[in-house]
Amino acid sequence: AAKAATGIADSKYILQPHATQILAILRILGADSRMQNHLIEIGTGEGKSVALGITAAVLAKLGATVDVVCFSSYLSKRDKAAFADLFSALGVEREVGYSNFDSLVNRQMEAGTHLPDARA
Image (cartoon, rainbow, N blue to C red; front, side):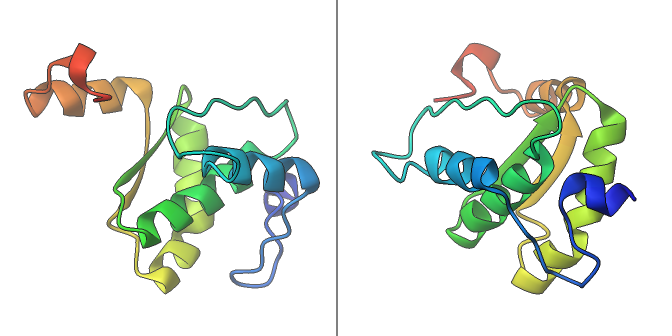
């Protein structure tokens, strides 16, 4: 039931993104312009987990380190587990991290990042 709710099929690595998810992925990746500062909104139940998981995998394959961040630790852990096999199969499990906002900020502060400059 949990896999059906996230849009992840029972077969290993088979994702079935919906139109909203595909449009979100293309927008985040900058399919219509440069890949910079794109903001999207996906409503409740429209598949943020799948859109972000696929986008994270693509960006990681392109050489980026990706942080997928959520307010909920539970949802971050759930989504990390849901996509673990896919990230492993693509060889990007080390490039994609899932966490909540508190954890991300703490990591940035421990690394000595000046937070206002973190997105530069």
